[in-house]
Length: 203
Image: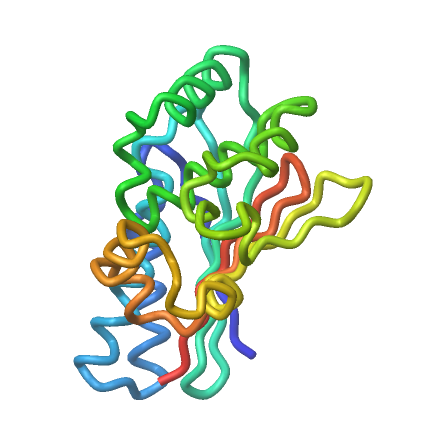
């Protein structure tokens, strides 16, 4: 499996190079123009998770390819200070977090909640303020290793658990989302403070 990695940050450094690498992988895999555009859009959405994020965070963006199957990844450490923690708490509890109205925004809120220092992350896991994890069981699609601060969320597992019974607002968000409509799966793995987001797509 071929793989390339480029470091990007919240100031936008590396964004253009990351997308150039994504496009070159699509070209080398012989994707059609339509397929190449879809791969490019997935890369843009993944990189977009870094936009608007405070704290000078750096992450490794990578593209892996085997045949016509791709994995786009974003990996780095998320460390929250007291100010960001306070903002997340307020946004998650008063319902005014506009970022959570989009699929990638929901991912950001979920990551933010689960990487809160101390026991606060666990408090959010058992509550109803985790963006995507808010239908039926508050931890739908989320797995946690007992006694650890390690979590994994899968879009595929989430959709399977929802089985058509998801909240109307969340269903609308999925239907509007480029990622949710194009990707085969999206996985979020967290071992505090390390975060790995992976988008899977086979053409």
